[in-house]
Length: 323
Ligand code: UFG
Image 1 (tube, rainbow, N blue to C red):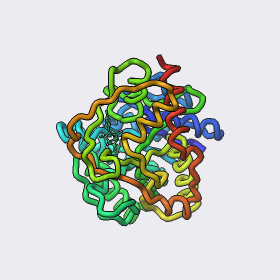
Image 2 (tube, helix red, strand yellow):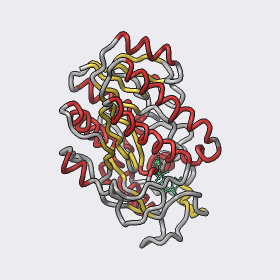
Image 3 (cartoon, rainbow, N blue to C red):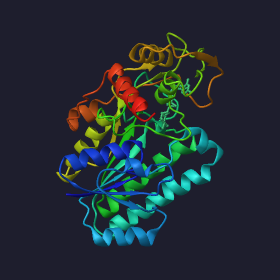
Image 4 (tube, rainbow, N blue to C red):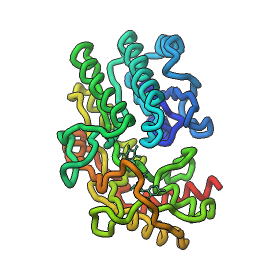
């Protein structure tokens, strides 16, 4: 099958392209390299291009018959979205609309879309199911929720078959050490901790230890990037087989506090990893844990790398290789 991976030079998209090529698919990676890296686009045919360029998209779709599109190409930093919402709505919403219009014009019927736990906003339950209220509290989460709503309308009116995959905390790296997380600036907990372990940073700024959690630090549901890729394949196959279009949560269902992540990272790396407690980071909920029963039961999604030790071990292997 020909599959388009938008944002395939980014963290999750690059792992996806590798997976699909290894599965025997013909992959085209489209990425504008605004946050992705040409060195990460190692699998498939790499096309440098921007979703804002409608003519470029038209020409790409005229040259290929994509059985499915996977769309990872978005900005994803909460704080940045609060400082510069226009950038988020333009790229995450308006540019996605360009993609949808071109897909519609070229009869490309299947889209697997990268959504986020940020569509829920402040959690009202211990773990989040897909029917939890959707009240995003920042422009990033709102931009993703807006696209989900557009997908619902495109599905009803034009027959688009879609899956919105709501990732919790994507983490880990390609076990081969070939691909991994490389954001600039890096804001995510595990890569930052590992940069401290590698001597690239002096200490971890631990944002708040006075939350209403057992050890006072925030709890998150870390899910391995390859398990996210596995879910994309399941969702794509489900849609190609005529399955229902909907949103799916992707997480392991177990929460780890920042202090626990730090402790596991110290044991995996054998490094001291100094940390200093700092004030809370605005917009951080105390606890975000997925209920992914739907993806497990209805898509048959199974996680292969659910252990936090494994996730950190793979991320550490990548961090050391890229030094
Ligand atoms: N943290 C620190 N120090 C750091 C970085 C993070 O203490 O240097 C803490 C954060 O305060 C938070 C936890 O580690 O409690 C995890 O933070 P991340 O930045 O790694 O991840 P988030 O949970 O903030 O973000 C993730 C996704 C977003 C998504 C969000 C949903 O990366 O895309 O979940 O709320 F929007």
